[in-house]
Image (cartoon, rainbow, N blue to C red):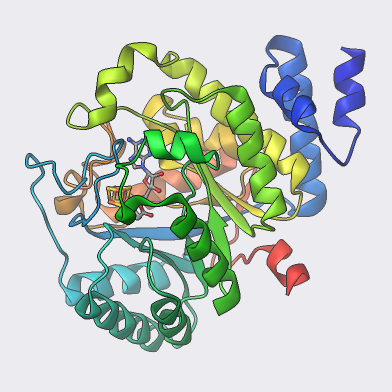
Length: 359
Ligand code: SAM
Ligand code: SF4
């Protein structure tokens, strides 16, 4: 217990320290969670920020081995919301004081897609009198497209590195130029250069992944000077290549626990960044996101995609809340955050404090 208290009192953490913290169970794990909650309270306070998530299309040009909506999955019913539907969801977020919106979709690299998104960003800014903050998560694009979207009004971008270990990255993606580790890193750099609050993240509990890989992921976020992180458990999907490794995975509850420990350790490493409580946590434990808020997360992304389409954005199986309409999700979240002893920062952008210190 003493050596854990000593590690927790540090402000810098070695790879070994991190692996040790990620292995904690029982009373020692409770110490880690308590320390992370203190660091969060001192640095980001008790406010939890909402980002209304609009998954506007499941059409994707890529073939990531873990993802249910990968291009080669012929079982997926593809959809693409109309501009009107996307703008209606944005209006819902603005009128309900969500503060920010996240636009996410499969990855397309065509000029028509870039133009459409640019136009949508300008329309969303217009309808909310510039008040709605906009995060986008639209995969790998050219530096020029990133710049155009930034100028059109997006100010945060989420691009998960998925794994910062190149060998593991290669095992979970096809080995071709569309799925190249160095390109992903270069994209993260261009996002920072374009002026975005830059977010990344990883999946936790992937086949072949070790605690050392996860410790390296946390150190990667720190060394890259990332502003926001969204990370959660990997959840298998039967219509994907990685499904054949399902018997090698750790049990779901263990993956969930490890995800909470990753969030808590990240809060110690990077006290002033934004950390999102991933929806995948809720797929394992109905109170998963609230538990994440208790141990260090300060952002939640309620799904405001019209209910009709949500079933078809199935990255993994048993995705939560797929039958609800946005209004139902909201009522349910208000109560849940109060349970996690947080307060919702209604109407606020809830920017990453780290970003404002960095630039
Ligand atoms: N297409 C964009 C991209 O890949 O960056 C954005 C959308 S993609 C669906 C968003 C994230 O979903 C990915 O970064 C990945 O980490 C996560 N994801 C995909 N399949 C998953 C799975 N089976 N379990 C958990 N997360 C998954
Ligand atoms: Fe497409 Fe993103 Fe899924 Fe990869 S993770 S297949 S890029 S939607």
